Image (cartoon, rainbow, N blue to C red):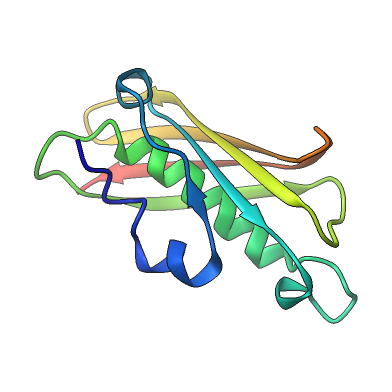
Length: 131
């Protein structure tokens, strides 16, 4: 089964690597997205811009939610909350998105981003609505 999120223009632009979905990922609403960060993604203080981290979290959560949709359904993020815990300069980041609760129209999703050494970088949550 093709995963439309893997080839999304934003994934190509920023450099997201979306892990292929297993059948269980589609059933429970789970996604892993990686990003290799370097100075091209830095803010003026020399660290990865918070908007890049928010985009990474949004991608992982959106993909997790999107994988639970039926054929022909679409969705949109309603809100997004993010908590930054550690600055990043140059690392490989791993974002793990997981559906927490889903109704017929609204779902709640969470994401944890860690670096390649297992350090917690940020935590995020969002609500999505089926369109």
